[in-house]
Image (cartoon, helix red, strand yellow):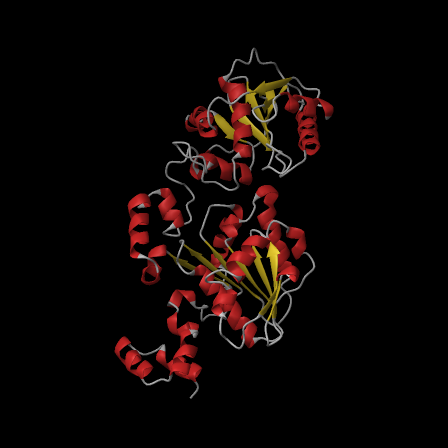
Amino acid sequence: MTAIERGAVLSRLDDDKRGKFLGELSDDENDILESYWPLWARAEQMPPAARWRLWLICAGRGFGKTRAGAEWVRHIAEEHDEARIALVARSIGEARAVMVEGESGILACCDGSEDRPFFEPSLRRLTWPSGAQATLYSAGEPESLRGPQHSHAWCDEIAKWDNAGDRALTTWDNLQMGLRLGEHPQVLATTTPRAVPLMRRLMGDGSDGDVVVTRGSSYDNAENLPAEFLAAMKRQYGSSALGRQELDGKLLEDVDGALWSRSMLEACREPFSAESIVRIVIGVDPPASSRGDACGIVVAGVTADGQGKVLADASIAQPSPDQWARRVAATAAEWRADRVVAEANQGGEMVASVLRAADCQMPLKLVHASHGKVARAEPVAALYETGRVNHVGHFPALEDELCGLMTGGDYQGPGHSPDRADALVWALTELMLGRRGEPRVRRF
């Protein structure tokens, strides 16, 4: 019986018998068993016994998701010499630092093993002695997955992937369409949950027989985490929304303390009706630089009886000044807007000059933020609570940001900043909370 075969037997023994068994092994055999993952893994860190296409580990921080992913990749590479594995993270840097070279990454799991892969950072490639290969990809570059074929994939922290312009969904879809090697392609996705479109889609797929969802919390891995860390996390975050999401691994549709809730937004939806709208404005939250976040561009209107209508989200991700200005101009023309309301804290009159250069002929109002984004949003959220605003259609990216604005000033939504939400706030403030003059009848 080999040391690995003994490990398989050992994993089924109770603690007393296991200790006796280990005492009978040589030092070399004990070294081998230290790297035998099934012996040390918790049951929820091992691949499901049932046949699966997608295995989604949705759990809190410190659960052991990265180790489970790295060990699964290691197993695939050692068992399938023709395996071609995609390693996808939010960025190439994160893929390398966490999935490959991290403390629980692939190289650490294979340390000291004859089957340790050779890593070529310049080629973003791992090659195992068996011949199996893994390639690193960035979820921020969806087109990089258009074309390459794979037999397996490990996608890490999918809830952190860039959701601007549905980029995360596009990355996921391109990956799925390239999983056409081998008889049974598989994807393992590991993440701490957040209520972003990709997570909601995959959690919804959990009813599919080919999809297995494993849930867990940080406390499940208490044996391998410092007791002081767990105590501090429980003391500081306890049953708060952040704690339930980041530690308990719960997917929160309605976050406690958020200014907007999912149920509130679903209740305010209605079909489009142009006849009653008397005024339309475009709210704009320009990016701080050409490499900044998205440019928030939201179209909103108001009816003669003072009901607000969110009509469109025309926001654009990481644009140049010319690109976002042209998008504003085109949106204003399409909706026959009465005014463009743009935040001028970043750039001042430069915002006006960029819009003029893009042939934006609508009256322009520059507004200066004297309070934080959340403070500005609170009066607008109150309009929703009293039923005075409707969403004409669905705006997933915008609504995710709204549900991430927290009472007290925090932001827990996707991306670095709620650019779309801020644009909506400027538009509805102008229409419903500012001095806007007499409404006039519009004809379409």
